[in-house]
Length: 62
Ligand code: FES
Image (cartoon, rainbow, N blue to C red):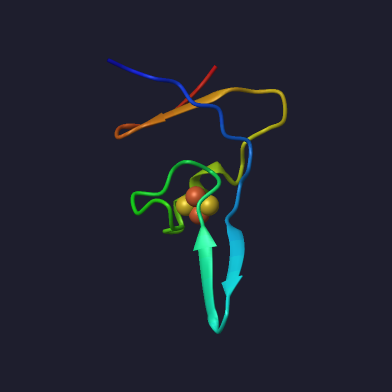
């Protein structure tokens, strides 16, 4: 079974909790959710108005 989920953010949300700072994934590509692992760099060159599908093999532009 597959599910498509739309993400439009290209970077993490910075969450300050007391003395601690967390970076929460908003791009949907992190392998360490809910935390950012830097995978959002793969989405850096996405163009507005285009749709991209990511999987373990890479990225497809539609
Ligand atoms: S925001 Fe998703 S990996 Fe960084």
